[in-house]
Amino acid sequence: MISQINAELLKVRSTRTTLGLVCGMLVLTLLIVILSGLLTHESGLLSKRDQINLFATGGVSLIFAALAGVLLITSEYRYGTIRSTFLFTPSRSRVVQAKLAAGLITGVGFGVAAVGLSLGIGSIILSARGIPSSLDTGDVLLLLFGGVAGVSLRGAVGVGLGAILRNQVAAVITLLAWDFVINGLLFGLAPSVGRFMPTTAADALMGEKTDHLLAPAAGGAVLLAWTLVLAAAGVATTLRTDVA
Amino acid sequence: MTAVVVAESLTKRFGSLLAVDDLSFTLVPGTITGFLGPNGAGKTTTLRMLLGLAEPTSGRALVLGKPYTQLEAPALRVGAVLEATDFHPGRSGRDHLCTLARAVSLPNSRADEVLKSVELQTAGRRRVKGYSLGMRQRLGLAGALLGDPELLILDEPANGLDPEGVRWLRDFLRAFASAGRTVLVSSHVLAEVAQTVNQVLIINHGRLVIESPLQELTRRIGGTVRVRTPRPDQLEQALAREQLEATRDDHTLIVRGAESDRVGDIAFAAGVPVHELVTEGSSLEEVFLELTSQGATAKPPTPTSERIA
Image (cartoon, rainbow over all chains, first blue to last red; front, side):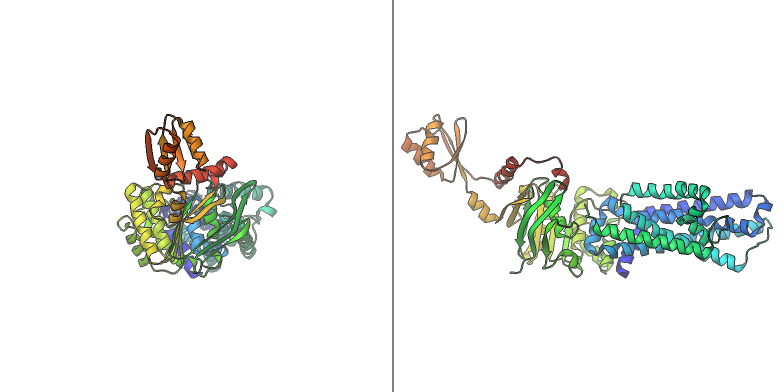
């Protein structure tokens, strides 16, 4: 299993797609945290809630990690490398498990980079503007570890989704529609349901304080459940499908 | 000798299309088998079932005594290339090989070795995007060789190769099999493999048409004799009396299953003037076309069969 995970991580590293995703993620994080840190009136940055939401900008990495996860499996179907992957590792459940693990590990990398960046730049901006921090150590740790865990699980959710759909375009569109349309609509119109979506659960896990969000632990549990369900469905689909 | 590959009544059905129909054959070690048939005959589907990528509707396929997916580390014993284009365009050839090597715990140095053996060492660090089709074919082959296999399964490896590339492939396969290893190579063009293989499996519409050593096939086919005469009707009747069949094209008769001496004698005895008498070595290509078109008349190809190839 270690060899398979190694192989999957090399696949992630050896194309420029991942580099592109990381760059996009960092630029977006930087842009949002700088703009909202500099343009928000001081009164909107004093409370604990406001500061956490500023620092949680790194949460934009959620979608990038999920995309990396989706691509980790769908690009194999798109370019046909899935054939040699299965020839070298005929146990398909092992292949998908290795990809899930690689998705988690990639997500950790994305999460550390993005959450670290938003936390670091956010703090610099606040102190430069002379705004005192209202966060305690627990808040910061939750942001860091909850954030990274959330992004990491989101990577694995992407792998599961990709394994179920296999078609790259369909999977990417589904992911984007789910995150930006369905998630937003559900959380806006029916927050009691919307808060159980993967992205909102991940926001909760980071300690974000938007209304209706679940408690961090509950958010983590919900996100973990999503990961397990999609992973199991992904394995099941992969097992019973012929490879063209 | 123990069989390297055994197909037992392999059958694959896609909806209403029977892509592979009750196909059985055996490959023994040290042979190079040409797996032949027109496009859409079911070759690729068969290979996919051998390699555990597709599940047979019925029947089974054994590779080295077991279904492929139940072999311990199959990539170290069986090398296969199904598509020449199975690479991520943005990944370098060497990285592609390294991802495969890692999955079976082989060192990266093994990737460099196989790159060298297919003469791609200088291009290895470039992205596959810039590779020619011939280079991609060789990169695929390099992947198949990573595990130093005893059986090589190649689907249409000569597609897109220039004549030099075809010759390179031929020499390569011969050298591979001379060490007692086994090759199964599919092609829709017999000429590509005729000089390399020592056994042929011909399929059409998913059914086995012929399984035979190449020499025996050539012998069985024999040659034909072409006779040009101003009185073809009379000669045709004379030949028929000797139980010889001839196909006729205007004033020319093609006689099957007889030497030119005998045909000349028959013509002389019948008093038929002969303007031309030629022995024609029936090429394997003609036989191949004949064998595969017989089935085609019995069961016309459907548009969907192309997709199955």
